[in-house]
Amino acid sequence: MSLRASAPRWLQASSVSTQSSAKESPIRKLADASKGCSEQGQVYAQCIFKAQFSKEGTGVERGICEKEFMAFKECVQTKMGRKW
Image (tube, rainbow, N blue to C red):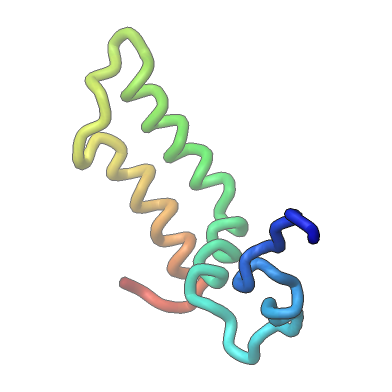
């Protein structure tokens, strides 16, 4: 008698589809669009980091890096071909 436990059924390779679906998931589309906007994303991230961790930083608050966020958002929307 073996005491070795098997992986849960949802984790087993046979239950995972290896074929890509005909319709790409929305989160995958967003991730792909974000990759194309790395420069704007980096500027936004630096602004947030500076606001949170620099000596003169005020902490992250709504609107603190609005200009940088809007540039990143517009880039992602352009890459995705839709607005929200």
